[in-house]
Amino acid sequence: MKEPEAPEKDLYARLHLSPDASDEEIRKAYRQWAQIYHPDKYQDPQMKDIATENFQRIRDAYEVLSDEHKRQIYDIYGMEGLNSGLELGPKLNRPEEIKEELERLRRRREEEKLFAHARPSGSLLANLSVPQYLEGGGIIRGMAMSSEVQSQISKRNTVAIGGNLVVTGKAGTGAATVLLRHHASSAASIEFMATAGLRSLVGIQTTRQVSAHSTATSGLSVSLRDGSINLSNGWTRQLSEHTVGNIQLVLGTESTIGVGWQKKNDKTTAAGEVKFGTSFFGASAHYTHHFSSKSHGRIAGRIGSTALEFEIGGGRRISDFSTVRMLYNIGIQGISWRFELHRAGQKLVIPVLLFRELNALVATSTLLIPSSLYFLLKTYIVKPYYLRRERQKALEKMESLSTQVHEAREAAKRAQKLLENVANRKKNKQLEKDGLVITRAIYGNRKLIRESSEHSEVKDDAASQLLDVTLPLNFLVTDSGQLKLHAGIKKSGIMGFCDPCPGEPKQLLVEYMFSGQKYTVVVDDYDELFLPQDIHRI
Image (cartoon, rainbow, N blue to C red):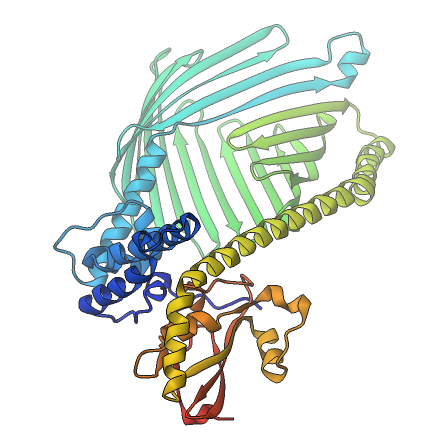
């Protein structure tokens, strides 16, 4: 069970302050801690280094909490808001104003980061034919490639430059395209496009959100070759939370009308379209199901005046940016496999025509044989490999976390070392007047704390998740014989404390003496603690 999320208040814990502390209380706390941790107070080089390390932590906390605007940012966004480089103007006082300004500045920073990098995309298709190769020809029957680079040239303007090249047999064609997109507002945009090549044309297209759920698109293109004009209109509407419908109408040399829909959620994606033209008609649909975050299956089909085919297959994500896919296709063109590799915006596609003629035995074999091989490989090779890799990652993560916890524990011990003299002096004063003395204090894993409250000794295997904080708590006892730890502040941030078990729920066990009586109390990590109290008496 992990700890509940809580606002970051570590800087308050360092200075032992309430989140509601006044400016004077912040200054007073800083002066008190500076007397302990200032490097000039120590002659021994080792002690001076320890003091320098902890004095820097105290000074960092004071610099934030003593600045009104930095403190407001910290209270809302924590150190993330401060480290992001965001700054507020002097006229922002209310928390809602600060939140609004921070969100605006954060969006601008993300946009600037996006503007600084072009976004390339492209694809390479190598069309292979086994029958052609067996007949004495080359195995490659055609290739195609396309590439596009899109760049944000200003807040509202985007430019895209691309091109494509297609080679089939001994014939080929290509084209180059330039597109400029201008966002006139958050609900409207306009695109200017020019294409040079076999079908050179220029065009313009406008898009506008006409309602909360509907978008309309209108376009005009003119062919530079014969002067023909094409008009296009499209409408898209959000039919439900996960479903979108669209209608597309094109008037020109090749007039068409199409109606389609798409449904997408966390597990499935489905889409379908019906299109009619002056010389053709067709319908297509596909369905993709995500079995996990890494693998998916796909079924697709197409029927029409020029096509009749069925496709089935699946894919797997092999890294954070790469996915491989294998699909089986059967139709009037024959039987084929298609391999795909997707990485970021790049795509490699290799269709392999296996047979031109349709045969039931061949069709079944070409589907079952690779499917069987895939499941055998996945079961006996791929899955064990991924399990070993995941175990290795888990071990490396545990080792890294263990190192961080060890370093934090050593830092806490160093901080306690500088508190020792003052803590012991305070403890002796309290003993003289029979006041508040912390006899035992342990901070760490909630389950182990409960066991420790029942037994005075801690098992060796549990010690790594617990931290003795008797000394820093004695240091925090006031001259009047009281101790208060503020609510809403994670106790691991207190000077001389650390987090001995990250991610686990924690508690603090305190045993103390007051007026000759024994007391004990256990509190959760973010709860307030005030000593002494009669209800703690044993």
